[in-house]
Length: 313
Image 1 (spheres, rainbow, N blue to C red):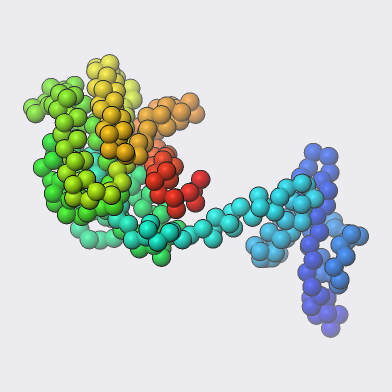
Image 2 (cartoon, helix red, strand yellow):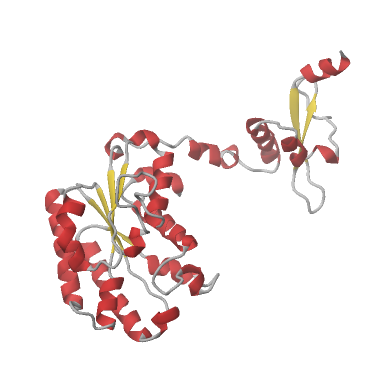
């Protein structure tokens, strides 16, 4: 009976000032009343023991709030995570959007070629973006399409643009292209185009899309290459070819009021933390961590046009 009586007493939390060099500690005791000023707390009743005793996350956060106020932290900063959880609605004019990702193998990501929803987005940055946004905004009615094809260049996109882009009528069109166009020039492949032809073909794709859907949002990614593996051979040609095409993409982004995603800048920063091959295993294709960096940067930059994405900032 005595044990049951103790269990029925309300649970209260108290925050203890830190010992020298240690953070605030929280304790939980079953007590009566609201006066916590003299509430004792032993070392074995710290945050860790609270969680191990299956106290709820909400009760634990309340305890953290008490300690945070004592430490001079604002309630808003303590509950920032919960606030973001509640920002899962998009404005009416940002609902029901269709997102289309176009490009080469980096976008393709070994995607499925049928309607199987388990594979349709591939396993790259397009998948990471779609999975994140789709999970966080399930009521917004968003649709995601991946039409990247390994090995594609600008002429390949032109040949399939009607079926794989215009017929889909996307509201947001993301394009990453240029590395295979560069490869064709470096390796003297048949059909290799000049930088000027690259720009002309790319511009025609954007013009046709704009004609079909005047309010379409373009998200243009800059191509990238790094001196890893075979790319070390003729490196200067690889580097110059990608840089020249990147300048054309920047020019087109400005002309069409497009979002510009500077993937090379992201990877240049990343390789200060790990070698290039950690991120771009063969100098061209991103690894899993690199695709995650691409997804983050895509969302960050596209926030300028789609306000609901500010959830992630």
